[in-house]
Image 1 (tube, rainbow, N blue to C red):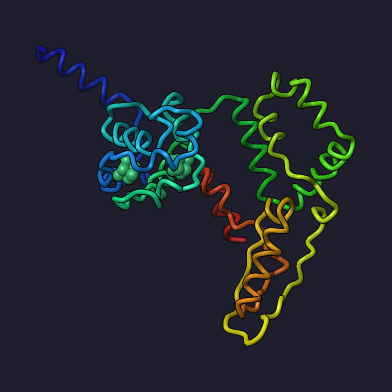
Image 2 (image 1 turned 180 degrees about the vertical axis):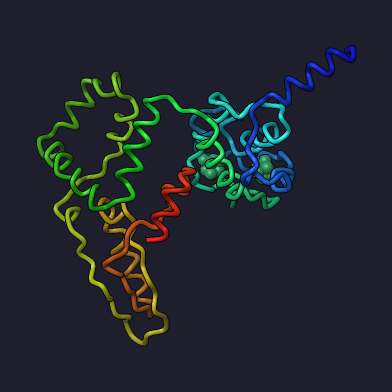
Length: 261
Ligand code: SF4
Ligand code: SF4
């Protein structure tokens, strides 16, 4: 390769949009990955999509390449970060102790800041971030969902495939919709649940935004276990969202605003 070609190639690499200077994925954490692949089978996105780029190892490769300007931070590459569920099964499975949680947490806000999304994507995400961290807003949505389920419409919608055809994302969410019950409309847990037997600890409990509406029995079971193990459980009435949802999706401003309240 002559000098001109080498310079042009170097310029081309430099022109790849990379992570910005605000907390990019730490190269030291990236380098800790020895590419052994032990994490692959634990990764749900890899198991469903079946592509290396949608595995923890592939995403770490990608972060490395973007850090070194060998691949762009773009719509094409960021889709592989978007497909990560953030379940962190890979982090506990990794024998080298790679802190994938730190890496993906650094990558998400980079994607939000630097990769433009389609209008449909923006609207869909806006809908989620305007609803899910706010139980009172979500509760309003429960009314039409309750009616929808009571009229038996899910069976009809799924058998015709109409939602899947025209709004596949909504169809995916609909397929996961838990049963909306009368309990979903109110917070039934008391503010304080006494410890059974001798009190050993006092524990604060976060009910979760979606969990308190759709999976309140999980909260009730947690409180029972804590109480049975000598914990007084305190459940502040005024609690809001813990900010995990926006934080884990790179919505830093919203997460900080929620955490501050
Ligand atoms: S993240 Fe850990 S388990 Fe996965 S490839 Fe890298 S070193 Fe191996
Ligand atoms: S956190 Fe992401 S990469 Fe890790 S196992 Fe879950 S989906 Fe896979």
